[in-house]
Image (cartoon, rainbow, N blue to C red; front, side):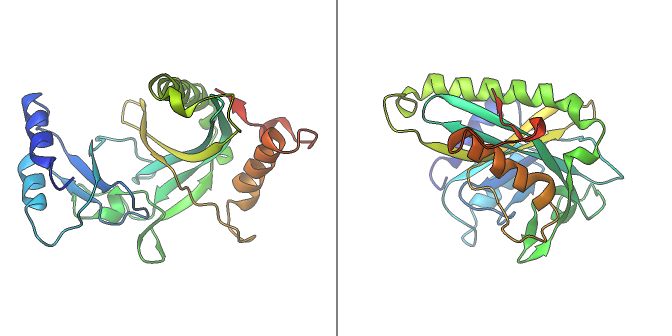
Length: 238
């Protein structure tokens, strides 16, 4: 944030992690707003010393590169996870790909080629969204996705025990979990979105393939146990 960034950069330098590309993201914004890519810690320091920049809490991450491209474009994988206050975690197995419209470029200032956020500039769409069911290789990723999310949820329940208590009324949260593959096809969790987009328009291209099924599965799991669903529309316990 505005006060601790010097110590964070010093810690990174001390661990000899400086020779990497970094991505800086505001913690509480979406749609790619105020995201920056940097080639060095010095560039990050120069950014924080500017007067005309967004303040507040940010997330600094190692920028995953080289990544696996499809048709010379970056893409990320979005899945939905439900976490409850009763120490339960579920994955909806059908997700979708956010494929960048702009071909990949090594130029870090070309954000539309590097970021797979749905929107970057006002209402202009930055990606093409394709249901995971259209990719024959997606089922091979599901065990890896489940393993990552299971480990993550277990760690959350271990470190934040006060948030998970079966004696209290059931509460739940839906997260959009974003993954990416590097050029060795290793799966990486990029981020957890605490306010994922759920379009209500019937004409949205993912409505019939992803969102309708997710909400039916959610209702069956938490509201109406008698709702009849196909196997593909069920939440998977992690």
